[in-house]
Image 1 (tube, rainbow, N blue to C red):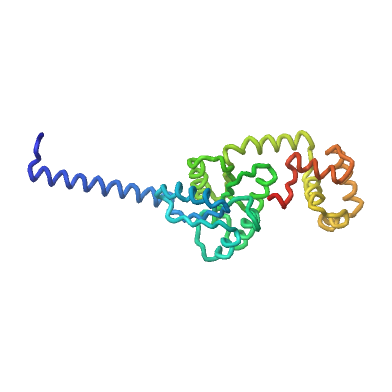
Image 2: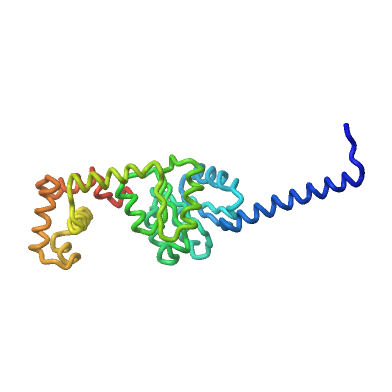
Length: 251
């Protein structure tokens, strides 16, 4: 075995030292470019949320991760939590994920707090509802940790774009195509359908849409003809079946 002279040994030590410094500097550059993130997870499933925290903690660009297993507990502290990314479940006891998003949007803009919905619920109406409420992205819980990281980085950098999980993109496309081809509902008819499904009366719908009762009844007849039903209960059931309406009690 070849022995190093003192000069060579000291040179090797310096080279190793430079290599370590270069590696640390490169890591610092990556973190600086991505931005050290603070993430909050709100999910009532304790095991899942703790495993998710453990997985995310392996990534150097994530500075801190906080877990709340109750939406109410999170909302009680939301104004003092300075997270960059919020990962929230859809279905939770008490306050659901949609309500959490709506509350957060009252105090923090989409560009300030990026919200990812992570849920087993993949019906198209729930997904749309999440985005309308102010979500920056939506993933199914069958997504890999690699895709979740991809989604986190995407919403962190993009101001005006939303992330849609890979497993639900085709579902949304098929739903939009089916809705357009099958029913061909106009924006006004979709609005009317949503109000009717939410239990609004003809009089209330007329007031909501600033239309006369006769005009609303005319729209209603046209809507029922397109949906191929004769009664309001059948209209609501068909809307639910085809993902055109999602009861809030399930959200």
